[in-house]
Length: 408
Image (cartoon, rainbow, N blue to C red; front, side, top):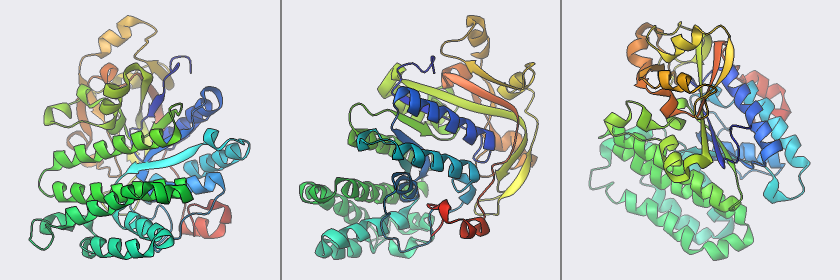
């Protein structure tokens, strides 16, 4: 807490999307930031509509009607529908119940843009309740995306055809119409209007993302992280000038991309954008582990498995951390306890990144990249041995009514 100081943004990473220690430590740090430093925003690498269900839960308010399955049903479900997040959401709800001023209550927001179907439904549901005529116009405009709702990646293949060339302008028109009627809509319920606007903006950005992904993969990465940064900015503006935010994302998003080989490929990330905009008012914290277990799949859309994490590569930062005579530790990098520590770590080394997919058999090629750790992060948190996050099973959800927002 002392090293974080007066930072307005604290970015908390993870070296995998399926390690319990990372989730639990991020929750512990976030609780301290809320209680001791007045943080009111939690923004995560999750879809906006799903995160909005947690937001409703921790405020004890009713969610918007949905026309599809419960939250966090999209692969990978274990990333947010797990026991660590469930426990933390209970704490957030209890905390908010003690806060009278709504401006000081905690908000939980999703920064990602994969929720094309959910966000379209959210916009239409909102418009049907406030302006049915405009809702019908919006439904027709979104019709160009309807055939690809189940697999939006296919949209990129057809988007250059004459039939779909107009889709971009139609989708943007829905967002523009919402913004034009800001005064009328927001007066009735500012929070609902903000939520609808963010979903409309997400649909517009997602359309562009999937269209670009088919032709230029690195540009689609940049579009995704630009969207996450812009969404964060919108949330902060909505919460007011005094708002402070904690961001939970993978190391590859919250570590400064300029300190990694991503930069050589022309890629940036939200960590770089935050540093460029907020400078020392942002504090970036990475996480790492050597061995243990992790929740991951072998291929995209595949079943979750509990996999063994291989011991770190001999030329990696993880191997250096493993050789320290302490299993778990905090490593200050912006304000090192000894300057020589930071200096010796500046030389680029391999760093491991496990996403929702983990392939130990090709780990060096699939999961390592070069980085300069002290330039990438302001601090690094190490767990030598770690364990897989525990997902909420459908049986668990059905048997526990208090698991809303993870159930019906």
